[in-house]
Image 1 (cartoon, helix red, strand yellow):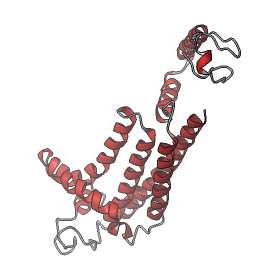
Image 2 (cartoon, rainbow, N blue to C red; image 1 turned 90 degrees about the horizontal axis):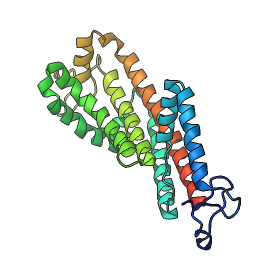
Image 3 (cartoon, rainbow, N blue to C red; image 1 turned 45 degrees about the horizontal axis):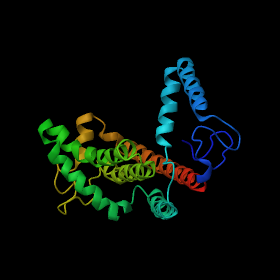
Image 4 (cartoon, helix red, strand yellow; image 1 turned 135 degrees about the vertical axis):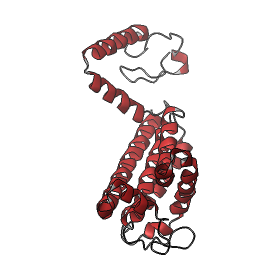
Length: 249
């Protein structure tokens, strides 16, 4: 039943696995241990506050790792983490006002979903057509992240999804910051000043009565993106460590 005893951590050899219900090292009876754990968990659930139980369940979900992982896969994850860690810091250190992020490879990826969003949200009216570009640009990484968590049970992949979401937020910040100035070069080779009405965020913030707050909103978006990026580093690094611990066992 158990290859590793949950009490003494004894690793059972093939010759010791004839008695499937007892640890040959400490004598733990696995079936009784499982019943005891079940009753303890059931009792804990009864005494837990609902929010505490939800938080614990969420934490267990977000930190789940498979029982075993190959060394080659772990090395591959470590290399991917290193690349995205260095790449992520390059975005964090970019100046919001300079729009250096607009010349990055990821900007071209985000732009595909941004333009698709205008088309997808068109049936919901003019405001949603304009907002839909930025909205889909953020929704796609969220969908990727959720799919990795719930469908694939791959929290390392989900941490990369969070990385993408944070990068996409930082990618939007200069566009928001340019709402009043209209100086950024837009798709089609024009600026918001050259062709009034084509600047998404000038239209969005004007409709919301927040145009004068464009710089503050851009700064908050950029800061949230940086915060989520740091969280993605911590999350991905934690999953790597847990995978390493699993492999050692």
